[in-house]
Amino acid sequence: MGRRRRGAPGADFTFVSPVVKYLLFLFNFIFWVISLVMVAIGVYARVMKHAEAALACLSVDPAIMLLVVGVLMFIITFCGCVGSIRENICLLQIFCVCLTVIFLLQLVAGILGFVFSDKARDKVTEIINDAIVHYRNDLDLQNLIDFGQREFGCCGGISYTDWSRNMYFNCDDSNPSRERCSVPFSCCIVTKEKEVINTMCGQDMQVLEFSEAGNHIHTNGCIDKLVNWIHSNLFLLGGIALGLAIPQLVGILLSQILINQIKDQIELQSYSQQHRSDPWS
Image (cartoon, rainbow, N blue to C red):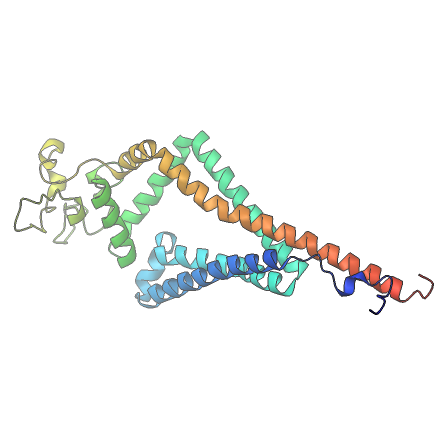
């Protein structure tokens, strides 16, 4: 058997674990593909909308939210993918820092939302009222509001009269809309016993008294319903929050382990080169 040269352990040994390296790559690749799908759906939704309507409600456009989240995920997971497969410390550090910042922001937002629940409620009310104003301007937003009102059995933000904020449902005498003083069909109480569903059941509901309107539509606002649902499903929400946090923590842990392994490998290679260049070692 031939003798091994002294000082050349780096030729056959590596600190970088293939398991950690390719597990991190696979982890990022899955979320990278998901981000591409989100961006594609967001772009498609934006392109299919009329320009005037799309620009009128950017702040409450679900397509914009999808695009922002998708692009952010794409950039972060791209750094993770390339950084892990190329063993690039700089990209891995960017990936690790971004995940850490996002995790901390989510944690801070959750704590602040709990501590300042009244201000959080006011902000949610503002967002819902803004969404009501642009209800007819964006089909995605309209479908989202209708879904929420049907699922929670509610109507409007605080009450069903909030729909007067929308120009089509406004109760002003000068409003020429056929939907004047009405509410969307998603506010209606629909029972399975009825063979024929009256899709115009929300017509003129805003002019009725609370008790009388309650015979036909859900009169309670969605904000109270949402708050009650949150209080009743704290364990479910905690599980969802944990489900979102675990992948982030796994990504941070794997990237930090890989960074340390790459640094150790660089030190080993530097040590080996120094000893190979020194004939007296």
